Length: 129
Image 1 (cartoon, rainbow, N blue to C red):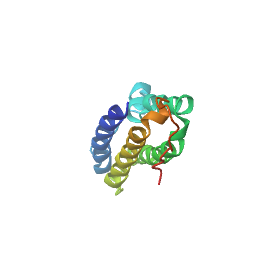
Image 2: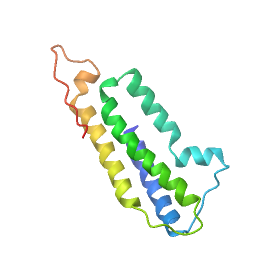
Image 3: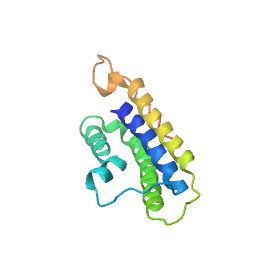
Image 4: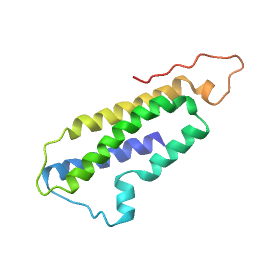
C-alpha cells in the first residue's frame, strides 16, 4: 500500500506542476477523478489499518496526514485559481515522501512488535518527529 501511495504521489506531483503553471485544470464535478486526485480510497484504507491493527503507528500517521492535507489544499487552490500561482509544490511533495518513508521505516523497524511475532517483549521505536 505504501508503494502505491508513493507512486500516486508522483502522479499528483505532475498534476500539481501543471496546475501551478496554469497548464491544466481538472473537473471537480467528476467524483471518480476527484477521489483519485485526492487519494481518498488509499487514505481511508490506511486510517482503518492503523486504527484497527497498528495503533502504535498513529503519531507517525498523523504527521503524514498533515502533509497530505497541505497537498490537498494546494491542489484545490491551484485548480480554482484563474492564474498560475507560486507555491512550494516541490517542497511539500518531497516532505510527503519523507513522511511516507518514515512511516515505512517505522513499520520495518517494529515489524515483530506490530505483528506480534516476537516471543519476548520488545521496545517500540517511534520515528515521529
